[in-house]
Length: 247
Ligand code: SG4
Ligand code: ZN
Image 1 (cartoon, rainbow, N blue to C red):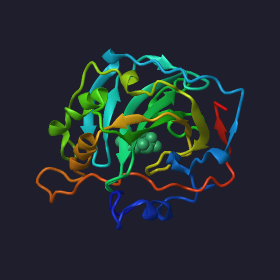
Image 2: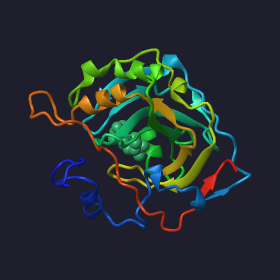
Image 3: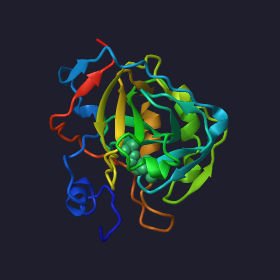
Image 4: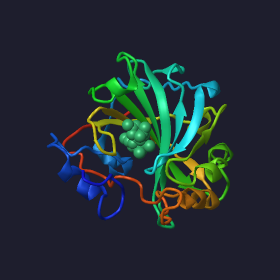
């Protein structure tokens, strides 16, 4: 791409695919494509087992597309469905409209590969756990710990330390999930992701939603451009199976 990718009319999701090499299928991303009728219960799916440790949390960064919390490379291993995966980072996507939803993505890599970088291009390389946030009057106190850093990461390229946060505290109480094979939702859209989407949502207050939307895509000194609608629109499933861990 001649210009960096983004979420505007000039460089947004409509433009990504045309500029990228041909794909076998258009990868699905946001779980809003999942309607229960598409999913079939699979008794063979194991319960989600996610273990994280507060001491593995390092820093939080505005990368100009989202903000993400980075986890120590040697961190605790976890077993999302099969194989041993390690959390690399978590980040969010959100809309700009009043009633739009937020999603949390926890990105894990398969430790049978030597690094995240090598795993990222393998078909069984990544497992992303997706959790929807639903607007609720009450503040989400765990999420607020993340939001309290926002003054320090308002613009692109800024980061701050974020030690001692346990990502487990963001998860819903019930870990029933849907799963399907897909891709990264951003360029280069690598087809390496086992998507695991939690059925249960977590909450976010309207004031917390407003904090997300006050972050900036733009760098310091550039014309301010609010970070909103930083998600890839739903993609067709193109015949892929969506399995449910619950009936
Ligand atoms: C966001 O832009 C993250 O900040 C990226 O993290 C992430 O890329 C990208 O989303 C795609 O991830 O779970 N939505 S997704 O498919 O994890 C990667 C970084 O740029 C490779 C590190
Ligand atoms: Zn994501």
